[in-house]
Image (cartoon, rainbow, N blue to C red):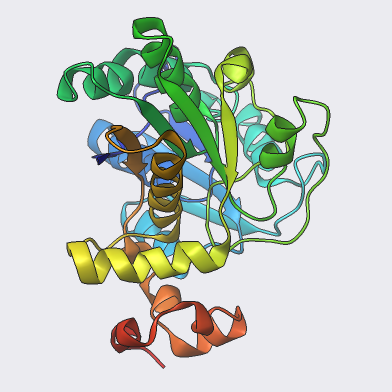
Length: 297
């Protein structure tokens, strides 16, 4: 059995931010959208730096929520012009501002340790056998894994990794290989070029790693729409593929949990466009009977 839960927005503890202040973050979009909602509700200004490779739908939504958005060239974390470093520098120049630093702010991991993990344990009546998801910040995987293994050390935890990320090879090599990466992925906001501060404390708790190709992810986007009526993005589809693969590894009768972390409405002009699918050489990955959902040119 595979169980999925809907991912909550990350919670950050910003005690020093005063009324009328500014929240600044570097994000591929989804955390930024959560922050923009909170800022709109609380009366804070919101400034978002993001790679210019992200979907236009996410940029438009952020701006509709009142955020000031800076799409910048996508460069490696080591480059000082990486979107996270630009966000940090922006916050440092402003009075009454915070950089939430989702990748290395351990309030991220703590939120999942204190809320998502207990929610999974409660809703499965403690009968969960495995947990798997991809990582961006690493907070969800780390926090949930820590909680579940403290409850039952027999629970397995697998990281799911897309092309272009280093973490699959890192875990498969026992932590010996970190900088080996190749290719890129259609997924947004997941995959990493380093071990984040959120993930680091729980690295030894991860039992295995699964490499999930874009072909498998895009097929699952269409399968979930057709078979389950779920309109999900590629990152969610990747997680579900990983859950299926984990279920096959653990064997019959096991209960596997994963996270539904994005909706297709934030990527629909890409995922359901024939031209875009052809440009990514992914049209062949969609079964013929599911191509009826490719409704955009």
